[in-house]
Image (cartoon, rainbow, N blue to C red; front, side):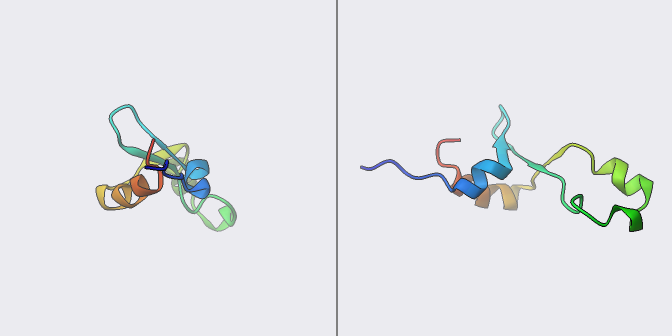
Length: 65
């Protein structure tokens, strides 16, 4: 069988934790920060773990992750 290709967009945006969960950057953090409260900006720092339904989709894009 040939090797499966990884989606190049997914490998740039997602990473897997040691326990197999999918880590992603926070959404809504690229622009328009002036209209958001400081609390929202503060809570969107760093990364987040995707929910199970979204993680299942992303894991198909990362076959060897």
